[in-house]
Image (cartoon, rainbow, N blue to C red):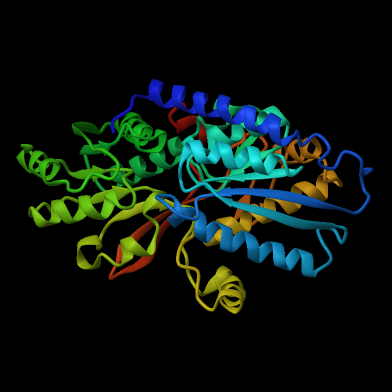
Length: 402
């Protein structure tokens, strides 16, 4: 179903209003840890509103695996700073905004000190607005819409770089490759799929490029044959195609255009960093996309792969298994700085974090409008594997405004 941005926002507000009543019924989290003096041992209760089923499972499931690995390590060592243990309360949002708000209300009723929300802006806004009301910090697994924190308030954060930042990286790569014209494909069904093509267009045109065609799809549509025909009819053909489509739409789109004989290079975004993309075979070769880092069992991630495999009996399959662990490291740094389980103290600490050492690099929040400041990786799919093209820290002055 196509929905306008206004309709989406109104829908989220309606959901949040209904869930606010549930939050009141469940009780406030004001007593989360406020009775414990700062510096005294206590338990940080973490609510996890996560899409373990549905369309966001490809982000949220590996993210939770990474976070649980971090939690086990911290608790085995006696807690953060030897005195702040972690307890999690996990509920499935089914990748639905309304359910995300309901689940958030239930988790806040548990007296949590920190809320983790799904890896997408729309359900995170629905959950985050309740956390804002309860004065509990919330952080999205990897919701990259730069409007996310501002849509909620000063208690909302994201572990992701902004979509406007990854669009700048993609546009600069396109220009460096000599691409002068581009076709963009987006969907009005989410903030992510709606805004990313717009950010890319602004950045690409500022480099001297031209957008020669724009397509629209509905999330979950069964085929992309009509769109493939429209692209094939363009004359002259664009030099590159950019789309933020993710599962299941990106594989369907790629199969449609390659099946129609369209060999134009394709640029994607962090939503396609998954085993599904790699399993597409030769049609995915040459696809370039942005993400938080290259997933590799050697180098800086070797130790992480080893301990992940020891816990789960498998290697991490998506970078979100790494960023989920890094969200734990962010919480660890904040609690260490706050020396408290108090939600407001933790929020204040996250706001001013700088230089947290993650697995993919350093992560900061100070000066980032509550979006993570982290490197952006450019990845190329080659023979079903990820190849690192570049690690980029875009100049903030060149990033399109949110």
